[in-house]
Length: 153
Image (cartoon, rainbow, N blue to C red; front, side):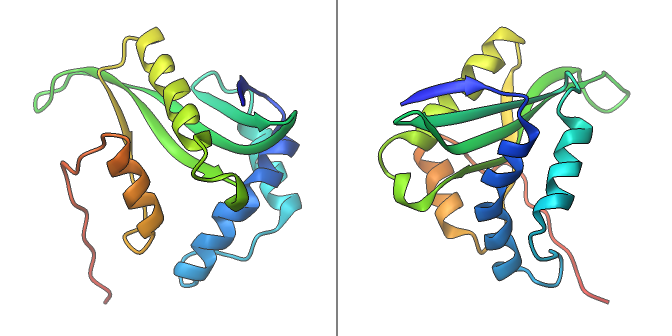
């Protein structure tokens, strides 16, 4: 199992299909069906932005999952102190490669990135019905510190 940083936007678009499809299944009100060409174009437009980092996990020489993270620098303002965080936009591992450490290895790479950038925390959010994500993040030491709510009108 190997973790690599990548700028291969086509590969990230392929690896995105699983997590995107899950979001569509859980929340069709918000998510459009997966469209490889549109997703590839999206990642192509952002892949060289230095704030965004993409890691892939390879098993037997083939990419089986990825993490898309962002380095966020929050400036001080009248309400909050300044800080740097690593924000995890997405992490996904092909189903048959779960529970063998791929996700944990990706998270270790994210933690290493946090150390490199002197970030004080790693932030993320997940959809409330994604119980697998909730369990994974809890297992990896994440704790809830804020809740977001909404009301349909």
